[in-house]
Every structure is written in C-alpha cells, then in structure tokens.
Image: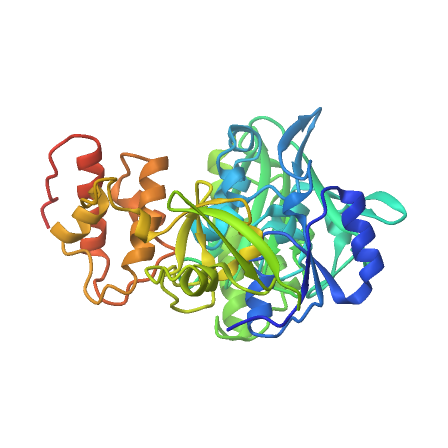
Amino acid sequence: MIPGSFSYHRPATVADAVKLLSDLGDEARPLAGGHSLVPMMKLRLATPGHLVDLHGVAGLKGILRDGGNIVIGAMTTQHELLASDEIGKSLPILHEAALLIADPQVRYRGTIGGNVANGDPGNDMPALMITLGASYRLEGPSGAREVLATDFYQGAYFTALEPSEILTAISIPVPPAGHGSAYEKLKRKVGDYATAAAAVVLTMSGGKVATCAIGLTNLHETPLLATDAAKAVIGTSLDAASLKKAAAAAEAIMSPAADARGPVEYRKHVGGIMVTRALQRAAQRAR
Amino acid sequence: MAKTHVTMKVNGAEVEGLVEPRTLLVHFIRENLQMTGTHIGCETTHCGACTVDIDGMSVKSCTMFAVQANGSDITTIEGMANADGSLSALQEGFRMMHGLQCGFCTPGMIVRAYRLLQENPQPSEEEIRMGISGNICRCTGYQNIVKAIQYAAAKINGVEFKEAAE
C-alpha cells in the first residue's frame, strides 16, 4: 500500500507552518505523529496534495507547570507523557489513559496534539480533556486563541479548528491535591479503540463525593461530558443506588454507533459499567 | 513528483538516496538499501514486523515517510549482531529458547525487545508482554518469545537464566 503523491514541507516555526497551510489551502494537511493520517493515506482514504510536517517546528514539545496549569506542547508524544514525573504526580489519569492507547511503537510517534485535534470519536484523550476542563491553544493566520475542550468537538472529525489553524498547546488546570481519578476502557484487545470508556476526576470530603466530573469516549460522535451522571453522585458515598443512578444518567446521553465492537444496546450497557467502575476506582484513590 | 535527497545513518553506515515524499521508510530500507531483514506484514500499523529503531525509539517503519527519517540514526535487524559478528544476547535468546517458528515476526520482535531492554534492563514478565504488545506473532503463542527476552535480560545483567516453572 503506497500513498498518493504529495509535496512534503517541513517548516521551522509555527508562523511558517500556518502560512504554508494558508497558502496551500484545502490540499494541505498538517502532519503530527502521523499514526492516524498515514494509514488513511495508504488506504487512499486521505489524499492530501501537501503535507506540512510539524516535527521540525521548534517549541511544540514539552511539559511545563504554569501556575495552576500544566501546559503540554502539541507535539509531545504519548511516550514522553508517560516518561514525565510531573504528569505522573499532577495528572495521573493521563498516564493511565496513555498506557491504554495503541502500543509502544505507536506511542513513540503518536502525539497528544494529534490525538485531541483529529476529532476521532475513538481517541481517548479528548474525553479526559473535557473532564479536566482543559483548553486548547489554536494558532492561525489571524493570531492565537484559546478554546475550551468542551467547545472544541462538533462532530466526528469536525472541530472548532479553522482551516490553516494549528493546535499548538494544551492547558490543563491541575486538579486539587488528594483528588482521585480513573480511566476505565473496555477494548477487545491491546491497541484497539474503546468499545466504551469513562474518565472520572473527583474529590471526596468526609466519605462523600464533593466534586465530580465524568467524560465518555467513543459513545457518541464527540466525547461527552456526563454532567447529570456527575450530579447524581455528588454528596453521596457512592452507594449502590447512587452508582446505578449515575450509570443510567450517563447511558441516557450515549448514542454510540453499532459496529464491530457491538450493537448500540451493548455499548451503552458497558458504557454504564465503565462509569460505575471509574467512579469506584477514583474514589478509592482520593484522599 | 520531484524526488528529495535524504541521508541517514543505518546500522552505523552513512547512506543516502533519492526518494519521493510518499516513499515509506520500510520501502526505502528494503528496496533502496536492499536490506530485506525488516519485514512488511500488515501494512496497517498493527503487526510490528517492520519495527526499526530510530533515534532511540521503536518505530513501525511502514507508518513513517523516508523523508521524515532524513538525518536520523537507524538500527535494523541487520545491525543487531555483536561487532565481531557473533549473536547478540537477544539473538542468542531467540535461538536458545526457540523464540520463533516461521520467523516472519522475528526481526521486529528483536528490534523492539532491544529498545525495551535498553529502557528497562530488568523487565518483569508482564512488562515484557506489554512491551512487545505492538508486535504480533501468529505461531508461537508468545511464550518462548517472552523466555527469549528473559534469557537476553539475564545475560546482559550477568546473571544465570532460570526458566520459570510452568
């Protein structure tokens, strides 16, 4: 399988990359880790005339603490996320999820920016980002802007990213010390996309849930924030009745596609179970 | 489409070539460099048979363009033997533990296991299994591949390899 012909560009700055995308128009695609785009090109499902490789752009890699936020450069790979002590300490849910993405080889190349910007409902990081209240820095011909992850996803592969804009960084508010988190992902085998997955970040106070956010992966054409499900457990000790209410509230907003991973009813059912398990595990980890 | 001149270091030797941007790294290695040890299995980034080591990373060379490897330092299965031509610890492990049957996945397995042991010289069985989870073998059931990597780890660490009781 050989991709169609294209011209290769390797800009050194964000400004040059944006200019290339802007000048080349619809035929151009930015290339990050390439582990979604290159397979699509080999199948000729994607036939861009120009690739703008972001690997040569300085300053798109790295993990920084900026006050109460962790700022991650878009070209930071999943492997680099896993190697970061700062992420392990402040945002352990990112480590947990990154380890469930694809396989070691893919994680050396796959980037967090590509994962969140592609708009693929099967990608794991978007649900984490909406759960954590992250925002994305988008840079385009008319400057830079910050967009909340919750406002970014519009449909499968449709996002707030304008043509010739590049997602350059992700800013994540660090959850309070003592928070608990968990990412529960049901998949058929190593490397698979989720049949259903749920992310939970919560805090506990006096044995009861004080704050809670729940995100869902691959259960809709966009990642979902399960607000009602989170409300159902706040103030409770995660007793069986509350967990059941939360799972039901989450299932009510799921609309997965029927595919090789199972029929709609099955995926919603296991989606509810992922929510339940993630809530329980996050609570165990909270202090 | 205009061809691009690329240079890179492969198994310690400087190599160069003219490639179209769409030329995949695995095709450059196999066809331009005539090093056919790196295999093409699934071509869909799943099987890991095409794994090579690039600048300290295990990479599926079917999912990267040769132009992207310009200037990089690559090791393939052809570069895995010791400098004197004798088998490296990993190669010896695969031989001694019968870590292959048809052998198609073996180049990718060995190149991947090389990086795994560089990063984690004393992996647990679980870490080995997760570490090679991007490499598919359809013959062995993985048991002897895991043993081969354990054998190599023991040899590298200068300890005696003992097979776990089954």
